[in-house]
Image (cartoon, rainbow, N blue to C red):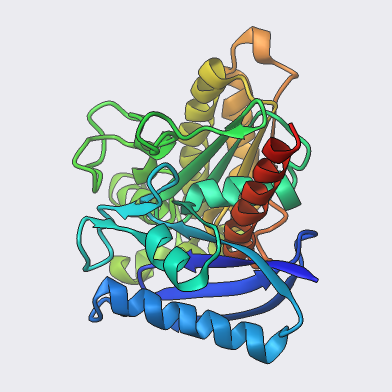
Length: 325
């Protein structure tokens, strides 16, 4: 049995697992992402834990490679570049460190690209050559596949759809710009929309009796499903901004599919119905009927680990194709 190692490096926890080529997570575990260690110490500790998982669960399995998905992961350099949620130097040589320890090929990319490759190999985009994958969570991540290949760009950071200007002179984004899509189509963006509606409308809502700082995305989804008018309007406005922005993305990328995943996407039709409505209304006529929006089927699975592992499997496939070309 061959397995790849998928690593999802987050600011709080690092998850890792052994994944078969068919997409079965055979074993998985996690450790805290301890930034009090030096990055050399942390990755030595991480690899030791990966070895333990391998030896204790699937000692007969052959490891074929390691895929790492991380915020600001750079597939061209194998580094994590300027990750704001990690108290380490600006450029962390992840591929070099894990490669030396393991003797395996290590592929690094950002977490959104990992999700896109996961969709390509195991998800609703399987077999598709042109699609966009969006992760709607604390932020908005985007991975783009064009002609069957992940779009990385000149410096490895292509696909920052979350930082296109969706609203002129809009909300201040963490990147320093105003009106970025991420500030609207994300869990924090949805909460901000609810807060603004509480201040600017008379719409009925249970949230008028609660502290604004205690409102969560799950609360909004729950109340919208029960018919809370203000929560439903918040999803309507979120869907309008997201739908218009996705129509713009189609104009210059011409995909056949857009996949939505992440915590905000779990709202299902509450988000999908308005997003699809405004998407179709703003889509150029030439693209109508040729592109669809779907929810990821990996949302409730080990999507982060699967996506990272898929990178390692894809790298193996590319090397094999090159060998016999």
